[in-house]
Length: 339
Image 1 (tube, helix red, strand yellow):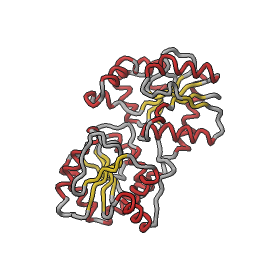
Image 2: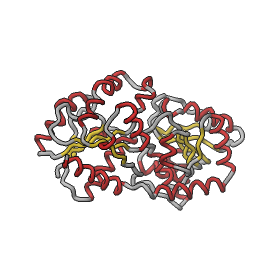
Image 3: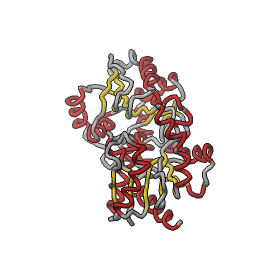
Image 4: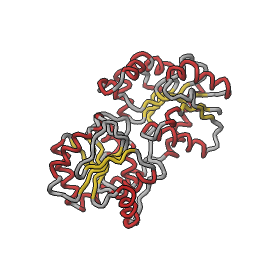
């Protein structure tokens, strides 16, 4: 079976979508599947060319049996198509997206869904939203969860963690970790407001943002912006954190949740359906700034609470693996070929 994966996302620094394709392609390779990974075009910005010509050029050149894309299919269908949809945040919060993204999703997305033989959603929440807005046949939509990269592991040597964080980032005290691009959808201003409410009480505590600072927020007092960090650095940042704070208006899955659970740190997150689906009873949920500051205070003061949610989260993380994701995806490739 020759499979073409649309991995143009891998040209970027890794966030959730990029990790999905990197881990899926890497894990499929373990099963010795004959597949091809092609980037068409190499200029990632030219998405329209990829849709109109690039996919089908690659299909012809590589004798492809099936193609796996994200959101947008080839304009002309020549082989079975599997389409992964991560989220539909553009439906809920269109003001957060640029004009090009809006045009693409308004005029090409529904057509792509109709051309797809199999649609993979990364959560039940995404599946429900897709059916709600696009009236897609439920029989061709399947939920396949993501997982944490194998590089994320719990580390017992706390001295090693402290030494590294001190030398690399000059972090010397307790900190809450926020992972992902710093953008309005992730509610960074609300996190900072909540932290300001407890900052005087916990003077030796920081909040640390690890991700591209798109809003260009400035560091002050105990608020740090590290920018993009490597996987090794991120793993140690998780392991050294008092807790992950993961707020968002909308997500398709929420990989940092799984990464935090894998590294045995408690989670404070937004009370939204998809986070409830992924973490179940293994996280502390908040709905506003007041609840966030109160929960941060509890986590800092109560060791038993930290241990409880670290334990629950670590056990929950075992449910997710890229081996499981790859095998389920492979079965869907076979299903698409039979249509």
